[in-house]
Image (cartoon, rainbow, N blue to C red):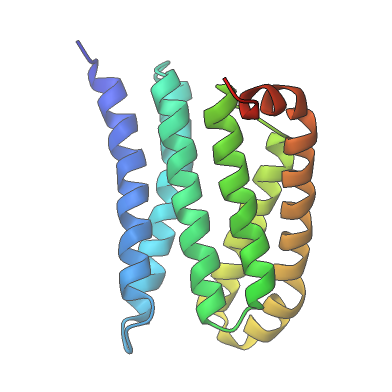
Amino acid sequence: MLRWQFMVVQLLTTLRVAAAMLFACVALIPGAHPIALGLYALALASDLADGYFARRLHCRSRFGEHYDGFADKAVDIVSVVYNAVQGAPVVACALILIRHVVALSIRAATGNRHAGSRIIGALTGASIRVITILVLVLPGTARWAHSYGIWIAATVSLTSASREIWTHRTQLSALMSPD
C-alpha cells in the first residue's frame, strides 16, 4: 500500500511534467506571456519542492528517482525547444537534445540510474533553465543568452554525452553485440 507521503512527492513531480507541457503549449501564444512565465516558474518550483519533500518525508524510491529524472528531462527539452523557436542556434539546441537522448538510453540499457556525471548534467539543466528565464523575463537578453549561453550549454552537453559513452563503453559494447 502506498503511503500518503509518496503520493505527495509523486503529485509534485507530476505537476512539474504538466506545467512543462502546458508551458510548451502556451509559450508561443501572443498575449499569453505572463501565463507561460507562471507555468515555467511552477515547473521549477515543483522541482525544488518534490526533492525537498522526498528527503524530508523519507520517501525516496527507485520509481521516484526515475520519475524525477523524466520530469527533469521534460522541463529541459521543453526549454531547449522554446529557446530554439526564440532564435537560439539550432545546432547548439540539437546537441543539447542529443545529450538527453544519450543519457536516457545509456541509463535504460545499463540499468544505471546515475550514468555519467550528475554534476555535468545538473550544470547543463541549470544553464538551460537560466537561459530560458532570462529570455522569458528579459527578452532583450535573448540575443546574448542565445549567442553565448546556449553554446556553452551545448559544449557541456557534448562533453557529458562523450563521457557517458566512454564510461559505459564496455557495457554498451556487450549490449550491442549480437545474441
